[in-house]
Amino acid sequence: MKLRLLTLAPTLMLASLLVLPANAQILYIQVNVSIPLDGSYDLDLNGDGVTDFTVKSKFLQGYCQGGDEDIWSLTVIPTAGNDVVITEDQIGSSYAAALLYGVPVDAGQNFYPGVSLAASLYWGSCGIGVLGEWLNLPNRYLGLRFRASDGTVHYAWAKLSAVAYLDQHGDLHTSTLLMGYAYQVSPGVGISAGAT
Image: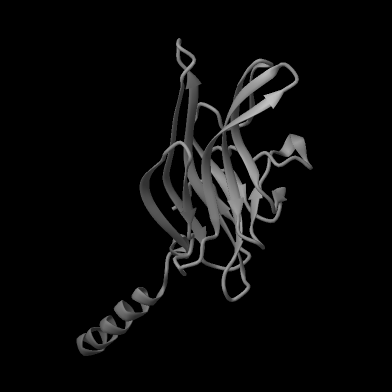
């Protein structure tokens, strides 16, 4: 009787190593990247050497009806075939949604295939204003959908914080931090924002 148990034990141990926990299907990469003003960061979510999305912080000078205007913007630029989750209450807009932890990123979301605005601060002759959901909100998540090189669709998130303000002298200060990202390895399966 003891001999049978001993020969069965290694088989059970091997079988337990082959069973993966449910969360093993998520690949998480922790980073601490500061994106400078007029800088960008290329996200390669699945590490295949192809940029899936670019996060870009940009300063522009423009004009409005009253004269000169300055604009800072934070945008998310998907590679062709990829998409960004947009705000629910503004379907048809291109504003990237600032998702809270745990929000599902899956086929039930609204996606936009073009350049998505995360945040914008503008000031000058025509006043001051903001656009987008991301300005001065720490630790929010971009919802992302991308196509791998084999054509399969995957869902992902990227954790960002975006700060921009004008000081008492009218000088612009910005801070954009990318703290990590993850994607669902199983094609077509959703992921929750922040899930690792």
